[in-house]
Length: 228
Image (cartoon, rainbow, N blue to C red):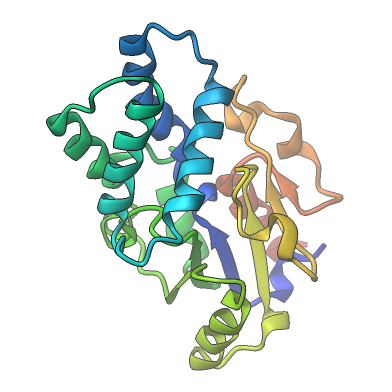
């Protein structure tokens, strides 16, 4: 795949933010308090199940409200009385979740050549706060409010004077990644190897597919394509 043929990148939020690490750091104390040896997969599974159900509640309109309610419901499932301060802390924690270390620098480079479109699950996190932390100015932010989010995406691209074929989707390995099941055109995958440094994983050396170990590797692939 020739990455220079595109004019925009559709970046799933999981390509920039280590959401699962933030989720686990916030919810692990609940499991410890309950005396239950829940695995990371079990905690993440509980998070995604609760988040999916809560997004259907029209009374929940912000990321902080969703995560606060989620914390309370998980505490109740673990037979705990949810602590109010801890509830508020988890509700507001999304703005402080860890970012992938390569993301700010890679975005700064990629913004010189692409329009940047951020794709995020509804109420997943405070996208405005994250734009500031990433020091990136996204040209559009598309929230997956319903199954018609592709229409919202196409409308956002039209406002930028772009066609859908000019957008390269960039997906993560998160289980709720928006591109996982709905993509119908070429997609670039960031397969971050958590067991080793991103710049040493095998994907960084594979130039035959649009699959890289990090956003920095995608930026490097673009540089190589310009020199080719």
